[in-house]
Length: 82
Image (cartoon, rainbow, N blue to C red):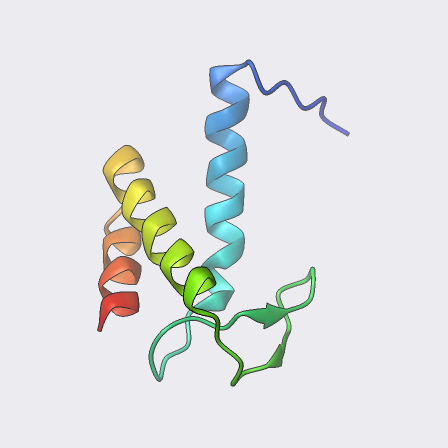
């Protein structure tokens, strides 16, 4: 197991990237994001949504786009706003 060094820039960038990559599975093709899923990404409730969680997805993808410049993050930000 890798030591979590939250003072290391490279660790933090890698950590944030892994988190954003995990949430790829959260995109609901019908709109918005799934909020209820297991640790492996399996969705167990595709209907329940929470306002704070929805805005968190949008904010995180927007910041991810600004920091990493990945077009997929911009697409997910827009997907959450539509």
